Length: 193
Image (cartoon, rainbow, N blue to C red):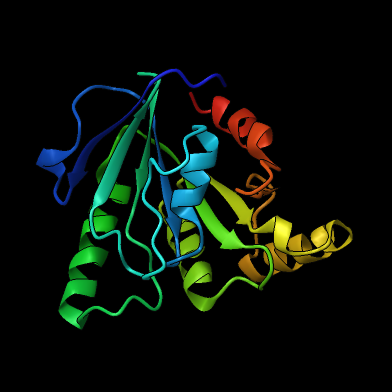
């Protein structure tokens, strides 16, 4: 997909702030620091459009990125080891659940996992949550450049087995460094647009 126009539209915390219109939306879920922002930047050919941070838990809102006036990437707060209070975490949980369960424009979730390691308990819980609500899911296994190509399939198999990935859901091996998997990811998203 040739990217001509990208805009950060809004950081929303409640439904009335979500953008109007019927453009398809793809939500990016994953633990803090798994590479959601790097994934967005690589997909849209921009260096620092979605801000990456070395501090986990930086994204605290639903960030809507409009791409080519054709679709949105929605970056949701990362789960896992963000150093925030229990109250804040519960508020995020409610905000994320509301978005995932009520948003008609949501076409699929992109579950971002780290190819180097088996998915965490939180990753498994997130995948089960998405399946519970029948949300189509594409698993993006990032950081492929950090392990030898010869071990990719072995790591992908562990990820699929740990998540108990259903046959309808695809796993794409991805690297924000090299662009590995970028075309496959765009190809997979096309089917929901």
